Amino acid sequence: MRQFDFMGKRRIAFIVSIVLTIVSVGALVLLNLNLGLDFTGGTVVELHYAAAPSLDDVRALLASHGFENFQVQTFGAANEVLVRLQQTFNNDVGNQVVAALDANGASIELVRAEFVGAQVGDQLRDQSGLGMLVAMAGVAVYVAFRFQYKFALCALISLAHDVVIVLGLFALFQWEFDLTVLAGIMAVIGYSLNDTIIVYDRIRENIRLSRSDDMAQIFNEAINQTLSRTLATSGTTLLVLFALFFLGGDMIHNFSISLILGIVAGTFSSVYVAAALLLVFKLERQDLIPAKKENVEGEEELP
Image 1 (cartoon, rainbow, N blue to C red):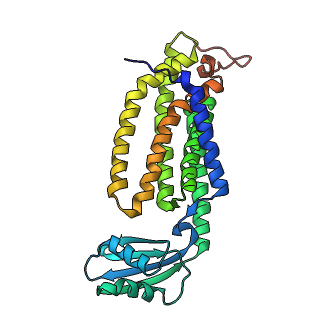
Image 2: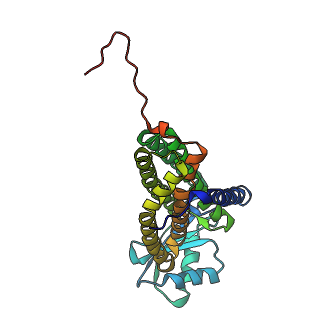
Image 3: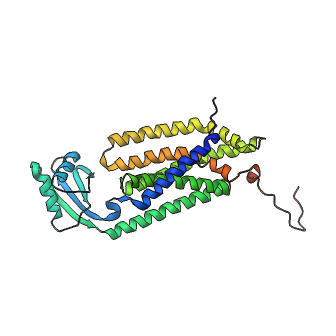
């Protein structure tokens, strides 16, 4: 089987990662995320249609009547429609939406019109950020116990790399960031960690079996041995995600984008960031050998 020299190209990969990270951080600082209604607050209008409408037609009618920054989705049954507006709430907003959508003579009943305050959005934002930090801290503890602290540091940097790049691209292109995108990023953390753990496990095994002290070569062999599994998993996952992107509809459009970007970044980081950083941290064979416990004075060794 052909062996690819991944570690030989690690400096180029580091440059790519550093540039992407700087661009992402710059976009987050200068442009900020385009937060959706889940985080900013807005108006929720629930409608009941006599017959299931076309959501594209509903969006077109709302846009033609001057509504902006809205989301349209079915709510339970196909004839139950939820309209989410990023506009100031007033007592007549529900009737305004019904009047706009009733232009074609459709039979529409206003079920409810409610305001979601920005305070709720702030709480969601804070809790989601805390949840992401807790998840990454848990990852670090798990990897440190299963492998060694150098593996944990490299895995944590790798995961942060993936999350920052996905968030940065959302800020750069001003794609709407809502709870579905956050769920996608959390899924990316799990996916990227799984891929990294498989590479790390093979690296640890090869270090123990090999008599060579050339860590770069050992890492190359480990990555090449897991490469077919990595490409097969990433490839089949991307096929599903592209199907969701093109056919899944407006509500999961950004969700699929976050996962596609995350899978690509995660696959790249499992090879070039998580593994190559072990060389930067100077991982050695001795790091994987458990320290011998010294006998306490007066105690006898067990046979």
